[in-house]
Image (cartoon, rainbow, N blue to C red; front, side, top):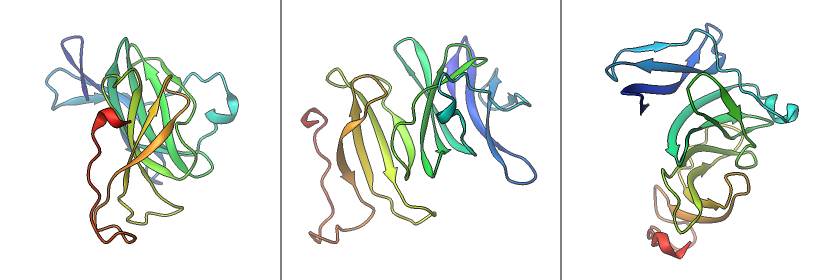
Length: 172
């Protein structure tokens, strides 16, 4: 949820009775009681190939520069990070998926760092294996992502026997 026109707005996961996961927009006057749109978000998408995703969940909204960006776990030939944007929480535009499958939990930084967009993500596999390693990736344009750097693990690294140290942000 984010502040929006003196109130709050957000994108939420809504499951139907068959556990079909979809994203819905919602608004709130107080940040506690939300009116969730009954219809799922229908993304405007110029590329019909990436518009064919099966399910969507774990949305996050972030204001950057002049619009609200939405990231979510997108099932497109495996779980990956979907990305789109909106100006008004009514019309949503779908962008390219950020990474190849399998990746989850994309979290955008709310501003550029050293002129680049930044995103945390959690690579995974074909199921809900409890990986937990978190990586930081950068992009010049929110489409081409690279410079993937390991940030942290939930336990000691199997190769070194020690927990990794957080790298300074300016080293990326």
